[in-house]
Image 1: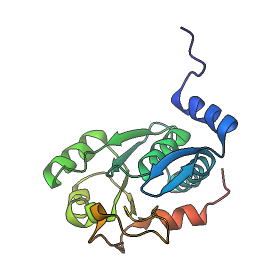
Image 2: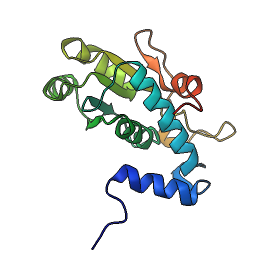
Image 3: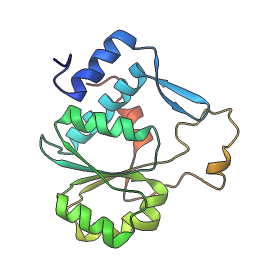
Image 4: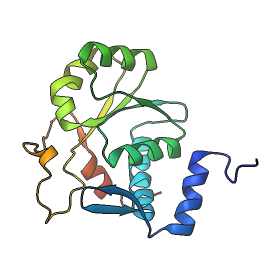
Length: 174
């Protein structure tokens, strides 16, 4: 069998060229199109490169099952970087081990995981930049709060970069 694409990024780009407006990710009551995911991952890739990410660098991803996972993976691939998935169930000791062993210089994580675990963990690692995001970021503005996210709130951390700001700042850049 001869694959139509040589890489997963090529496969994604073919999907975007053929189905730009089709839903690629569904998150509660919101659908995000392939074109929107492509644009957001471009924005994140530009920001990562501006912060020194080079081909072969490791980008750690400490996220729950949220749309930001797809955006992060694609952005890393667009930079030629390697994704280091970190299970969101990890606690400080395990996170330090993975970040240290991988040599990750960038960490993309949920703001609550940063507050609870990652903030303390990164001090002894090579992580230079942390980008945080919220499980609430892709909920429709008019939607009722899903029960599973009840009690969640967006957190701001002075020592991190907010993904929502990165996406807004670099919109349209590739």
